[in-house]
Every structure is written in C-alpha cells, then in structure tokens.
Amino acid sequence: MFTKRLAAGLISATFALHAAAADFNFKFQSSDPSGVKNFEIQQEWADRVEKMSGGRVSIDLLPVGSVVSHTETLGAMKMGVLDGHISVTGYFSGQDPAFGLIGNTVGAWSSPDQLIDYINHGGGYELMNELYRPYGVKFVGGGGTGLESFVSKKPLNSVEDLKGLKMRAPEGLVQSVFAAAGAAPVNLPGSEVYTALGKGVIDAADYTVFSTNHHAGLHEIAAHPVYPGFHSLPLIEIAMGLKAWEKLPEDIQTIMTVSARDFAQDISTQLAMADKTAVMEARANPEITVHDWSAEERRKFRTIARDQWKAYAEQSPNAEKVYKSVTTYLESQGLL
Image (cartoon, rainbow, N blue to C red; front, top):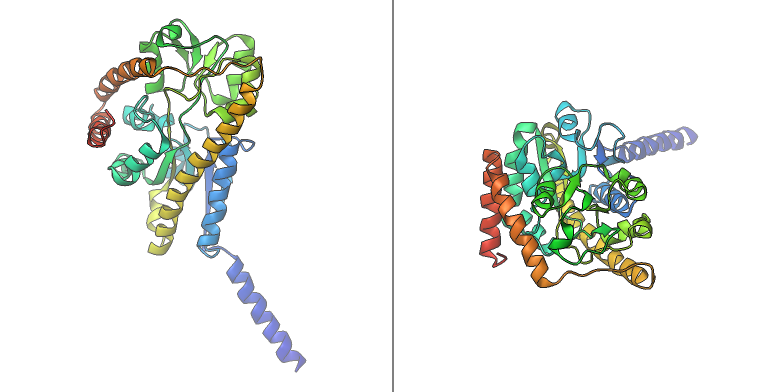
C-alpha cells in the first residue's frame, strides 16, 4: 500500500512539475526603467499573458538597457538575443523614417483612443507588420501612453514662446517639428532629462505624460508644465521576433494579440487617471503653474506639424506609405 501511495505521489508531483513549467519562455525588454508606472503596467501585461495561457507562456520583462540599448531591440529580436520588446516605435526612426512618422505623428491625435482605433481598425496593424517583416519582427499590438505633457522652466503659452527654446526632444519627427516651430531641440535619453534641466543644458523637455514627469520631480526644477499636451502622442508597441511568433500555436497567438489590445487600453487609462491626480497636486502647489494652450495656438502648432509630415514622407517609400495611411484615416474620421 505504501509503495502504491509513493508511486501515486511521484506521478502527481511529476504532473505538477510539468504543469508549472511553461511551454514558451520569452525574454522581453522594455524601453522604460523598472521604477516607473509604465513598467508596472507592462509587467501586469506579462503576468496576465501567463494566466490567460494557463501557464504555457512565461515572459521575463527586463527594464531598458538590460540587454541592449533602447534603439537596438529590433536587431536583437532578429538575432534571437531578445524574444520581444515593449517599446516606442519612434525610437527606430534611424532605421527608416517611416518608424518616426507612424511612431509619433506629432499633432495628429487628440487622445490615445484615436491612435488605438487607427491601429486596430484603420490599417495601422497591417501596415506595422508590413514595415517590420524585413526586420524579422512581428508587431503584436499597441496604442498610446497618453497625450504627453511638456515640462519647461519658462512660461509657455503659445507657438511664439517656443522660438529659441533649448529643449529635449526624441529623435525623428518630433525634433523636426519643434525645429520648424523655432525651438532648438537636442537628442537626450529620458534618463538624462532631470540632470539636463537642473544644469541648464536645456530649459524644457518633451518627455512623457504629466504624472510620470511629476513623480520624477521634474516640476520642481521646471515649474511651467503644459497640460493637456499639444504635441506628442507616441505609439507604444508590443512586438516579438517573427520566427518565435510563427512557432506559436494559434490559440497562443490569439491570446498574445488580445492581451496586447488590453494592454493598450490599460496603459492609456491608468496613466490618464494618474495624470488627473498629479495635476491636482501640481495646481495646489503655488510654485508650479500649469499652462493650457488655447485652441488657436494648438491649431498653429498642428499646421506646422502637418507640413513636417509631408517633408518626412519624402524621406523613404515606407514613410510615404505611412503618410498616406494615417492621413486617409484621419480624413475618413473627420479628424483633419
């Protein structure tokens, strides 16, 4: 009897071990550091995929720079060094201007929902996969973190106030638009924004959403934030190596796709809620002045941005595809 019980126990333990071991173990790298809310929401996504798949998929999510720099993850996926990433598409504008244009069509979107609708139902998903296929990458899904705020040491109430402004802007279209508006943009990683503002290297920064800026202490040294933002709404994406994707069974592919859509809604909703709380805290501080641009000034900036869309579209055939796709969608929805 004891032998039978022992054998049954061993069999049960063996099944439990197999049940606990994932069929697919993936290493993903984020473009965010581990201490920010963006990364926390991304980790929630990774945990949810594991639960939805019944433990068949396990995703080890690493913070920015853990394996390669934030601009090198496309190549790392193709070589199999990384299985996937959660990143901002615009970071890859150096590979093709198309990524800069679709990754942050500056001035195009008034809310993350508009960008999410374009990705899921307006042709963006198909176009992203067409653009990524030569890189051996599968675009799983994405959306917007939120309409980004703007931190500044100087009062900003109009396009005119941007002239000569020393500011941080990420590579690609964002820099081009601000330069066309008369600013003097420089390319700095997000991790250096606080120090650069403190030392006077820059006087303003296009970095991220209001709550993240606020919790990072940026408003303590740059007390003139602009909210709601008037400029950037970057595409944040979940992508993975195409070979790894094609090896997944259909049900796991569906779980990954649906969960990516959930992630897009989660991150924009949670950050918008956090922004409202942070804005109330900032407005209660007499040393911080929150600036809200008028509709007229927002239109002026958008006009400058649209001219840059056209100029950017001429830089590569893929950028031209992006320009046609995005503007066709905007026109169809009455957003132009």
